[in-house]
Length: 338
Ligand SMILES: [Ca+2]
Ligand SMILES: [Ca+2]
Image (cartoon, rainbow, N blue to C red; front, side, top):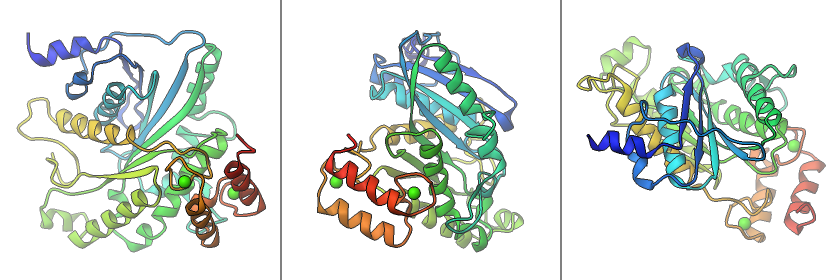
């Protein structure tokens, strides 16, 4: 029996199930905290044994989303890393991806005050009529007598936005609006930790040109995405550069008999591992996430508020910077809200 199979069986507390088609796939993974750390590094697609959550259990939901590279195998890798981390007693990956989509399919608009939810956000995350996939999943959890939180967000998207500065410039604000809107619509009591993946291509500049891109376009997008990951203490970026590609864009290995599976899952484990090491802020006023309320947080809030940086947008309505944000900061800072 191979090491992979034995390790796979050791992951007996995981449950995985898919809902295809690929453009609208869903992977949900319930995990207990007792899985050994050695299990993180193994493929487990054929290994899962159900361990259903029971009444009264609390489920931490981690969203994995993006475009085609955010495929099910990538999400599965994230789930395995989360399982191995032991950070959550019971976690579940909520997975959606949309091949070839620009970020404006999730968030429309290019300036504070004019953002709207795009079709992907409305279909997957939140919709006024309650029909989004995440809302449906949360209703199931609540109906089962369980509690929930949205604990993290892993994002693998950006190739579609790499061609034009017109798309790149508003990207960071659209991304942060998406996170703030999730916090707002699901009334989370914390900011959402996230990992964003830096895009790459296979190094074939001619093929890249066929896709109306130059290497400079890719690097500009990567630089923008690094800025998104570095913009807050609870964010992070990972670099997909130099990971094997199946074609121009997609993670994959031509020599792998399993096709594009292995690199996607491996990379997902890196992303998931990074998410589980994000610091946990003391409160929404702990803007540098060092678990101390001090002058550094006040300075960060003031600077962020002045330039309408989403870090200061800590009270509804999202995307509006007003007295409510200031009062919320003071309340959290002084402990009144705690
Ligand atoms: Ca602090
Ligand atoms: Ca606000």
